[in-house]
Length: 189
Image 1 (spheres, rainbow, N blue to C red):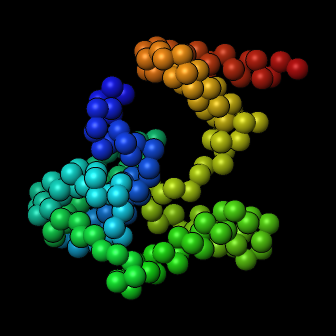
Image 2: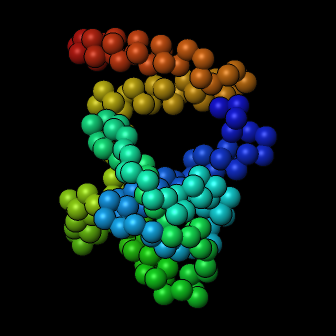
Image 3: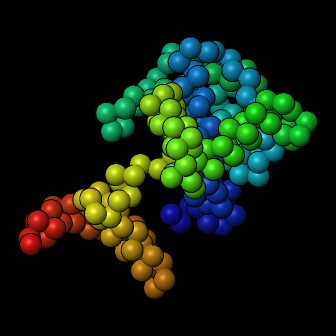
C-alpha cells in the first residue's frame, strides 16, 4: 500500500475501475482480435494510468493467460497503437458508450423499474466481459457469509486507517480466522 502514495497515479486512482474495465474489455477482445485500436473518452484516471497498457502495443508473442477464481483471463492482448483519447462530443462511438453507461446507471438506481431490470438481466446473462463494474450482490449482501466477511474486513481496514496503523500486516490471518470461525458463529442460534 505504501507504493500507492507519493504522487503515484496508481495510488490516486486505485479505487477507480476505469483501468480494470478497460483491461477486461481488451482481454476479452484480444481473444479474437490482434492489433486493436483503442479510443477512450478523455478520462483523467485512464490518461494517468495508461503506462501498463503501453507494453501491449505491437505485442505479437504467444497468448498467455492467468486463472483467478476458476476463470481464465488473457494477459497478452495486442494493441495497434497507444490508447487514443478524445472528447465524447467529438467522437460518435464515445457518445454511444455514454448512452449505454447512462442507461446502466439508471437501471442500477431503479431496480423496481421493469424495463431497467430487464436491461440488467440481459447484461448479466450475456457475460461477455467479466471485469466490469457491476457488483456481485452475493458478496455484498451482509446476510450471507461472503458479505459478512467482506464487511468485517472493510471495517477492520477503516479502523486501522483511522488509527494510522498499517493496513496490511496480518490481514490475511485475520481473514483466514474469520473465514474459519464465522460460519460457526452465524449458525449458533
